[in-house]
Image (spheres, helix red, strand yellow):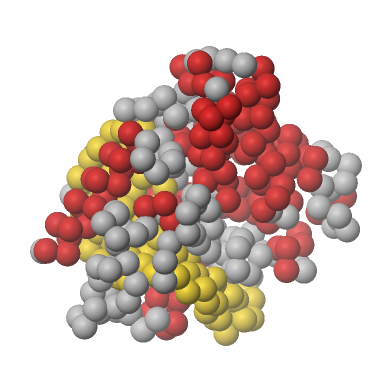
Length: 358
């Protein structure tokens, strides 16, 4: 039973921290600096940092680069369990770029000193900063693919809409093109738990209010998994259930400053790729030229099936897989060797092989 518990907690940690159990080889960390960055809301910042990690190398044609972007509370190394020779993201075949979106990791973030005065950024801001990294920092004019899980799919679709000629493929795991009231309500409750911690002090705290962060994770916990998993044998023992219940929030508290996690979830909460297009989702997604790989979880209730169906229906070219799992929104973030990991790895590898051959 405790072995099962470790696997449960490991999956939560993978999504929470963007870390994998085993490191990939030949990785290089770096930071790209944007001299002057203007946010969507009009705020501006000098020397905006964009942290990233690379694996592999560019081929002679410079057309094998893949930009991997994380879920809301993940980071630049979120995909490491899928990176390696023979895996979905093969550094012997691809030049892989794992990016820290604005607001976390080695990128500019509230925790650097601005605290609550850090601009409220958006998914589009993340993508504009990543585009600067890719084109100005790395000198690339074309990517093989862009994408990731959850908020990574927000970014991937935004890339496809805003820079439609920039990539050949989109990798969209547990995806949506927008947030909705269900997810927005979850985030509102998470935000309330953190900001009501007496230590938060309106965001101008001297010590990170970790108790509020830990307990905010409990609010999110039941939305991550399915009913059958929550009531099934893996979590049957009270001690195991309690450990799993706190795992997500404890991961947040270790990895995130309160303002930084609040700003990050605010960006996900308010995302809608159709907003700059008059709210017309068909018009927005109709701009995409890339072929999309859509991998859904059969039991996801963070991103509900209707949101994924909207993506599948409106994107011009879609390769689709639904992973049968009781692990809910974490269905694509299960440990290496699990049935879910095996299915996601195989389909993603196949998709990229076809893209490369086109």
